[in-house]
Amino acid sequence: MEVPILKQGDYLIASIQAALTDEDLLKLRDELAERVGKYRSRGVIVDVTVLDVMDSFASRTLTATAHMLRLRGAETVIVGIQPEVAFAMVQLGLTLEGVTTMLDLEEGLAFLNRQIKTKQGAKRAR
Amino acid sequence: MEVPILKQGDYLIASIQAALTDEDLLKLRDELAERVGKYRSRGVIVDVTVLDVMDSFASRTLTATAHMLRLRGAETVIVGIQPEVAFAMVQLGLTLEGVTTMLDLEEGLAFLNRQIKTKQGAKRAR
Amino acid sequence: MPGEILTEVRILIKSDADVVTARQQARSVATQLGFSGSDLTIIATAISEMARNIVSYTGMGEIILGPTHHGTKQGILMIARDEGPGIPNVAKAMQDGYSTGNSLGLGLPGTKRLMDEFDIVSEMGKGTTVTMKKWKR
Amino acid sequence: MPGEILTEVRILIKSDADVVTARQQARSVATQLGFSGSDLTIIATAISEMARNIVSYTGMGEIILGPTHHGTKQGILMIARDEGPGIPNVAKAMQDGYSTGNSLGLGLPGTKRLMDEFDIVSEMGKGTTVTMKKWKR
Ligand SMILES: Nc1ncnc2c1ncn2[C@@H]1O[C@H](COP(=O)(O)OP(=O)(O)O)[C@@H](O)[C@H]1O
Ligand SMILES: Nc1ncnc2c1ncn2[C@@H]1O[C@H](COP(=O)(O)OP(=O)(O)O)[C@@H](O)[C@H]1O
Image 1 (tube, rainbow over the protein chains, first blue to last red):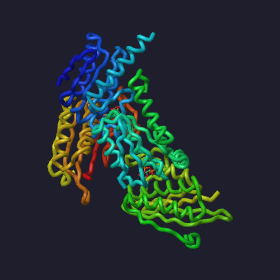
Image 2 (image 1 turned 90 degrees about the horizontal axis):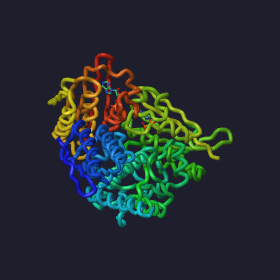
Image 3 (image 1 turned 120 degrees about the vertical axis):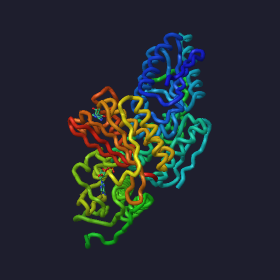
């Protein structure tokens, strides 16, 4: 199950469409790392709304993805974690430490817009 | 004993009014997870001022609640832990690991305002 | 324990609402016995932990609260008693972080830290009795 | 376990696609048994963790899902079984953060927290069996 990655201006949006195998998740990570370089993207949103399970492998891979993309110059936001999924994750001990999480795509985009404006402001001020 | 949850702009404020049973606490957790989605809240304050006991179950449940809500995109602050309650908690070995605690509602609101401004501004390492 | 407890309060513990009742009663009895401030919180917290263990790990049990003394020291005696399955390894159960449930495993060791005296007797298939004392300052 | 399992579903686990199948089956069996809401997510998550351990640490194994009961309590029985190398130190493996791979080491202890009952038996060179139960509320 490949994850479609849309380019929208400075951002990439990966909308997970169905349950993913571990291999699909690793492919997504690599694909995002490549495209962030290719499109010089400033922000990435991974929409996990449809995922009904976020287990330790998925959490670890998404956390690693966010860290990797930051090193490549893009901010990552995970959006759409459902309440029951959040509940199970917390019980398992998974907290996505160091990763930005937002309610949904809209909030994620708003976050990136604010984020990037501030970064540009800071640069101009220099 | 149901806990009233007030919506105040981008925030939800849960003001515990009386001693809670374990079930009440679990209900509060689930209710907050749901409303954060419904109202697109950015911050949640749980006011425990009236609690004269914060035992291991309450600590564990509030910690889990804060982690869950973060995964849903909202920052949580526990406010109003009384000095004697804090003392007993420390003796018991309860530390609310990874949860923000503030003196009172006012401080909690000020914290959320700063927090959300910072999120809008330059990214700080969490 | 006859002779030691002059007046006592017994609270039947079988649901999580009883845990709330027990901690409120503990606070009230302790106040009557002359405790105040943070000691009341400590006593109520200890009772909350022990009452919850009864609900979590046994069907039913009771909390007994009353006065106690030792020489000139005055205090409160608290007993949490059940006829549940018992604890296979009490030494292990008394360690921080040990839990057979999904919880923090701080109830028994933490409560011991809150009390001046803490004694636990458990027999497999017979039940568990925790006897605690807190002295007035 | 005969008599306990009335109808059961067995899923062969040998690749990471089977992990996805197992968690979907777990959700489906649990739904048929009357579970709903966050319990379905919890059951699917537990199975995902146990199925992944089979793929990661052994060649192959199986997941068995079926009904169970205890007195009036009704629930789901989940067994994850393999004939892999076994776990040298089960107590260590049950600790948060312990992993011989490069992963989080939360699979076993975290899954125990998700379940009402969790039992693991492992014998070196013979394999590992994890037996879990979740009761309906
Ligand atoms: N009254 C009791 N009857 C039987 N077992 C008990 C009782 N109280 C405690 N236990 C056992 O001792 C363990 C440790 O208890 P405790 O320190 O209170 O931590 P927790 O309740 O968080 O597990 C429990 O997990 C349980 O197995
Ligand atoms: N079915 C199994 N067979 C053999 N070893 C296992 C099995 N399941 C778990 N283990 C061992 O136990 C350790 C802890 O497992 P777990 O808590 O699931 O964390 P993780 O899988 O992240 O390492 C693993 O690193 C592995 O060494």
